[in-house]
Image (cartoon, rainbow, N blue to C red; front, side, top):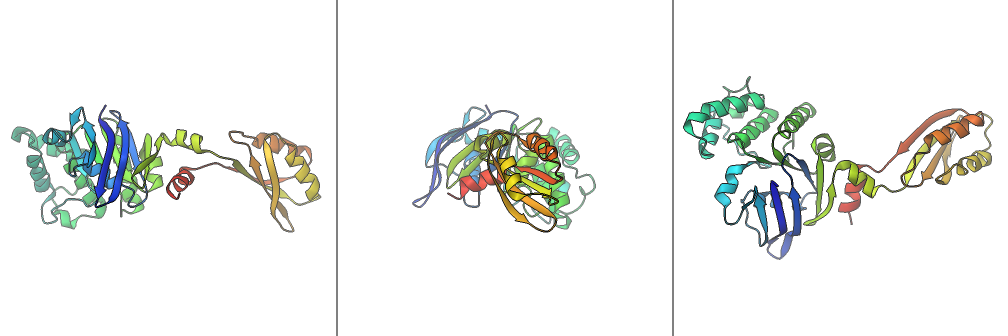
Length: 313
């Protein structure tokens, strides 16, 4: 077990930023810590990394208690905060050497560690440049390199793709997936695509409390409600009452309605029972009636739907 959180609570004044949460993260997992702004994501990460002290509860990282063994815990964690801790006037290689010394990397291993990070993080073309000259994407790579310079078992990344352009985001996501093969990785974000693209598991936090925990697929299955199917038919020789009666007779269709029509087409919305896929039945029924299908599309509960459902209560 890489991270174990038990009944964790943190107050800012009288406000509970984190309210009695518990969870465990296994070795080798990439976990997305998902929630709206102000939900408690960064506060939780800062407590895991020993930057903040909880008001109540316990945290264990690789079986080390963060309260009584904080220095040893820090040696096992690589942390990239939302505000990247870079010295812009330093050369990339000089900065990584400085970071290695701060992380107590043995002197004889520093050069090797820097070379490895330059390779892993794709910094070869910019390693001799000052950090202030780099694009934001490369600055994030330098931040990741400093977080990993001491080869930690656990990586904590707070909003690692914030402010990046689409190409930079793709590159950082690719790097995160690569890192997740050999390390335990916790990725904080409020960007849903981030989680779907990179994470094995999702923790959703809202108002300081964990409101969901599972894989993206398991959460979609758990929170999946009624499925909606959009059906568009060519209008030629169609009687609306006949077509509604025919569609409503198909198994598991709970309700069918015509949402709009024009001179050329009927557009129907079909509500289907949870867990059922009746697209083939719909297709066969319509074809047997000699009608033309212009469109057939099924919409299921997305991670975005789940997020909104859990964080807007």
